[in-house]
Image (cartoon, rainbow over all chains, first blue to last red; front, side, top):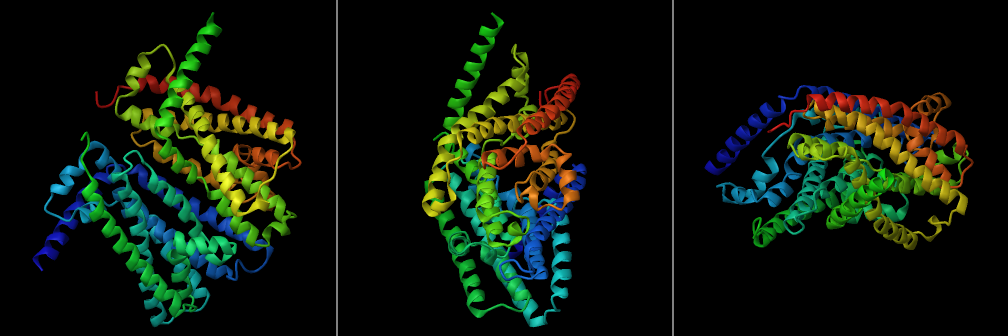
Length: 264
Length: 264
């Protein structure tokens, strides 16, 4: 019990200090706002071009596709807030040897590396995304509380999957020190989550389900929200989340055995 | 005499930067992989009927996006991110002492990075050809030659545009954030995510008035063997370059007067 409180207190001081540091750059807020709405407008424009040929995209209606886009934007905002500022730094710790200090701290090192900072600049994206999801899903029919709960659970699963993918790629820098921007590759390929997975050719659909689980990130929660969720997909999503998180934990425990500190 | 000297400097720069890039080959593989966006968009567009609505055959679509993929791979500009760090950490100072404008060094680094990408992109194309043999084709000598020249011209235009933004590093510690803003019109107006033929006429006219379509749409369509007014395209790129060159030069000189080697 005391250890939970300890982690909670650590988290509070981590985030209040990093917020104070980030707020030193108020211009970033403006840039971030413009970039969120610019990106959203551009995505809507492209989506509308894709719908010009017919009334559906891979069997999805316009409102359904908007929910998927909203979920993608939501995950992107959370990435900017939490994943990117923390996990893209692991490689710097490895390269400069400061990972030594992290490992010595009386706190779980994966927890420290994953939560040390928080950046407020993803908040505009999160706000815009929640608005878009609420608007589009209510136009497709107001979801019942049970569906909403299921969608929330699946969203949580997709967050766990997303976090694990990021953490695994970032932790690989223990072996490949010079891989600076592995996480950037992930961010670029996850762009595929902007569209429902059935919009892709069958071969790519398999890749996006089993290799790079983009389908579980946006399509599956969106289907639940639209009342089309199936037990198989929900179960698959939860299983993928458990596997991914367990994998990331195992990899980190394994990686620490290979860490030999900088210059040694 | 000056020509010989210039040639020797250029050779030394290119050879040393190429050696440096080879040292970072794992990172360059990752950067090359992160340029898959046009291929993802190819997946979405080939699944939707929107291309046919704009009068594009499936073959035209796949050739267009494959060409856009190549264009994207060889017109990547990352000047601002490197320069921001160099300026912040004071590494720019020794460069300024040398009898060579620092921008030449960065330009050589970009050319070397392109050269080190060639084998990686070749392997990616080979893999693509194995998975989907129908996708690859052999362009005619004329479109290949014109396309390659256009790619370099587009690269030069992107580089000059980023030089203009990069000079803002002299005034702000976080100028690289501005690059995110520049990325939005580049992403949506250049033809990277949707062929310009599918745009509504008014939006298309607006896009053509910006430098962005000349950076992807023009070289990609040359390479894909479409009907393109090559003279107009090259003239447009030259005009934009001539506009950006004096602006960049003026900002650079003004910024240099402000530079005080931060951290020194």
